[in-house]
Image (cartoon, rainbow over all chains, first blue to last red; front, top):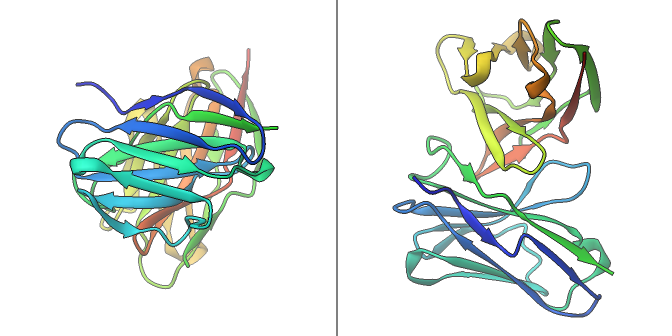
Length: 115
Length: 111
């Protein structure tokens, strides 16, 4: 079966610009996650969707980050305006059922560089 | 919030040697614990998980981990390392709705 797809794979922007990332989860997976992985650290959950509803967005910087999951399938994560400290790899993951029982399958990530 | 600590940032082992990566958790009750591997250019992959029951857990790629409540540890082991095992390894604990990951241990395998 196809894995989690993400695009773009790389993005370079200047600070204060906006950027959007796209994720297509594994077909049939109800739960979708966005993580931020800063160099030298483990992934940090930004937001978790169950179908098209938000389960947890407690670590999402809502003044500049937003995410949506249309029709409970694809999802987009947006940053506006970007700051230097947003430079990171943004990982999307999906699972058939909610955690912890649901195994999370990760996409390859989008590497964002903010200059 | 529950958290994990991976004391070793980098580990170097010779190919064929045994491996142990350390993970300590902070949690009162029995935690849900995971080990993931992240290879260059690839996504994170689940190696194994512990929820309850047998404290020795078998995973993919010949890895195993042992849950020790008395030491608050969940160390990952492999009896004989292959060059393809070179990667970043993350321990994680389920907390609230989310997985909390450690900072990772980078494994280098020498010939």
